[in-house]
Length: 164
Image (cartoon, rainbow, N blue to C red; front, side, top):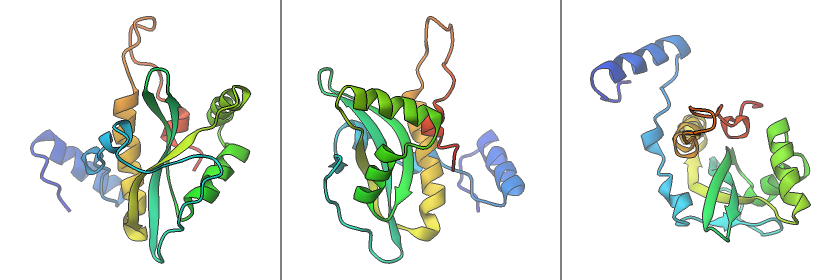
């Protein structure tokens, strides 16, 4: 399947497909603004949220919201059938060492991560590719030049979702 990027991008997509046997992730499939502009549902620890319909799932981001500066930082991207249950699981068993540190720091300040629902009703057959596309899309938003490092910091392992 060709996406029609044009030029070198088509070659990279073809190489990705040839190597993995899967469609290449496309960050442009995900609109990151829905999270940063607060145009989606946000779930807090203890909130109830409906379970996905049969054959579907939710695409979500775990976020850290700094109300003082009105900033949202995406720290993790995933998919779940039950957002409320999954958020509780993230808080009680954060997983990777990076998420343990991040969530531990939040809990020490008596705050919790929130879950932003990026997309509802995602077909299970499309969920993995959309999750990867979301990871790539949010990586590009969350990675900024660091003058102290004279470069980009290493990508956040929590966002990369590498413990899957």
